[in-house]
Length: 343
Image 1 (tube, rainbow, N blue to C red):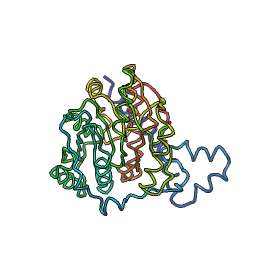
Image 2: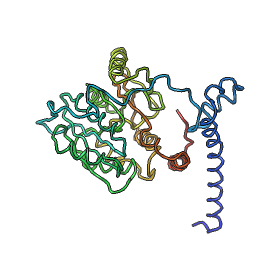
Image 3: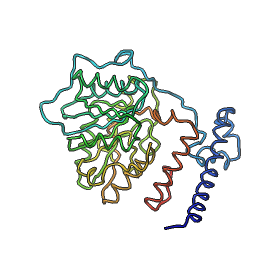
Image 4: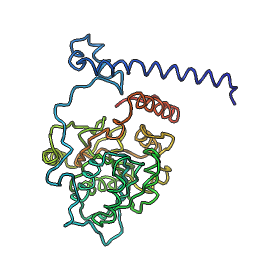
């Protein structure tokens, strides 16, 4: 065991390293709020521009979004409601368990659940939602949906925010399906998405986890958002997936906004590592754990799931977010004895 002096010295070094990480990123954030850095960036020397674009992740100066997808869908009501004329019920036991963690953003949860109702196909599924002490009406809304019988939904309401990993582990403990799909509440699914993911997962025993392409996730699965609303999203998604039928690639890692894996594998891995606390880096961690078993990850190009992105973490104060990013990145690197690289 280290002496108190050595321990405090190590802690001091770690804290100094954090501040050397934090200060330039806070400077970029401050300048970004007060100057048009996204325009100035391209007139700066190349090495400075690239540093602003990539080198200070996650506080980089990115190009402004040309299109922002609406968080409303008139065809589903305002606010969005489930369709009482199409309850989703199955005679057979669920083969798929969809795990969702909520923390506020009720409007997005409404969209997500309506999309699951609209996209329901022949594959029997169950939805298990764990609410992490949302301060809005999310918990009561979920309980109403569960009581309505319009979706095969179970709800767990935590008295405190237990974090992303712990809440998903809670949901998985209740799951009965052979396949687990981790799904963020800021997603919109399309018909055939469950069947597409499960078919890809079962195609080869060497495949451990699969995920869809999307508009926003920060890695190879990201296609951008060239549509202003969910109606246009469905058209874009169909055009893309129809032209990429059967295409599979190795993404390096899969973002857990939407990912499917066998429940048996999940249990063998022990679920998500709750050492990541409130969240971040669980997806990198799970990808490493799956690969450590000698299994592959696959990006399924003929399945598309819309992802609004950052719905929960964007609510954090900037310094809190950066501290969480730093802490969890260090935890990941020490656990896996590697240097994390932004993909």
